[in-house]
Length: 136
Image (cartoon, rainbow, N blue to C red; front, side, top):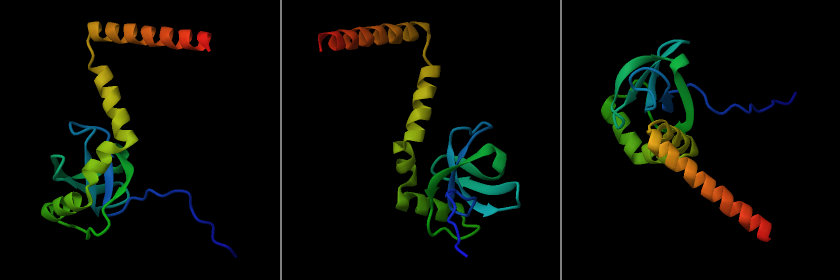
């Protein structure tokens, strides 16, 4: 009997970096430091100003990042040292997921005139591409 390996790689585990989806801290990342039950975990984000708190899995997204040597129930100081040592915050900011979220947030914050300027830039780019294709 052969054991088939799962395609699923992101598990709820101590040390897993998560993205908060709701509440006043939405959009920030934190680390699971303890699992309470099947619905909640204790998270902590000392570098991203997320206080230690119980959080429902429904309001978390599991990221592909993970702290490798984080013990269960680690304090904020230990979590901070591990985050700095492994450079998780920098890895997150360089990920395509974080860049996409930042671009969406920037686009949402544009005022009417800035959206108009974006439209004109898109028209100019579209015109340049059309002329280049016609020339070739």
